[in-house]
Picture 1 (tube, rainbow, N blue to C red):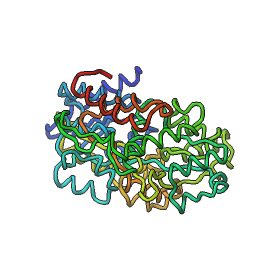
Picture 2: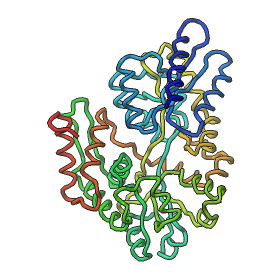
Picture 3: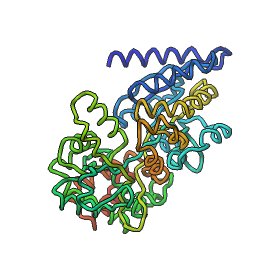
Picture 4: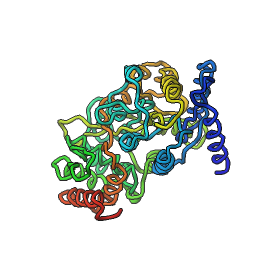
Length: 423
């Protein structure tokens, strides 16, 4: 904590020395925690700039909600030391609507969206305008044990599977499904993907005035999604209601789970464990991967979309330099580097054709296909309130009534946005 505090103070001091004074711009990039990849990219771009600007990094808290809280407070105070931010996509509408983001120049917008997967563009857009620069884009795949899938008569790699098929296979093979049943943001991610896969949306029409927001939680798609959640909870194992992404991987590696929905970090983690001698090579050798399961047999799935996009602080004294740096950060070369070293998939589709990327992540073609079909979480300036209400009403999944839980969640969201109830 002390080290982080020193880093933040140092970064702020550096930024204060920058600005439009005619010399090199000293930029501060607020990053989410990673394995050092963003700091390395900052160093690369500083060198490439040839003295035009320098980039120092300051690390935000690990939890996404804490990142948002710190940034909102500082930007509300018009902190001009914040030049670049690695921002979680669900918070982009809120920051844009509040006037916290410097407008993306038209020529920059054209360049940074060229060849970018559609979900990353959608996640960077608010009110039909690009307000962020797509950086890395994440999605979930269906991971499965090939031996169990074969025994169950499933071929997910070549034939799309439904959640119902997975539940049936888990019951027949006496195994479990690892999904994010925990009361946390991961639950909202799962619910949103299910509703979108069934052809609906949590928010059917957004609006600045919360009274005008139209929710889709009572639709047929929402009911179908809730039915999937309840069904999966019956084969999710005893710890399903407290299981997040990391617990799911552990269960998939060492426990009973033969099917799992999760992010691509699953692969790198398994290989690292093999190298460390804590996991037998036979475990990842049995891994299969495919597109996210379908809710409806005749409708393609809409997998989760995540990742991180870059935004420029509205009060930065180095806006032009910050956007120049952002273009360097999201270059194809840097995205490929970040993918292969930190395991964070690229937003540029061309990166998935890189032989080195495919060598490290043989799942690359499926990840790209998934990202093209992925759906962002509800885009609203009230995202924190919406997500919090959903987590409260849809947890635990084993106790929900699919026919009524949507109405209960919609009523809670409406009351919270009207200031009539607190979460």
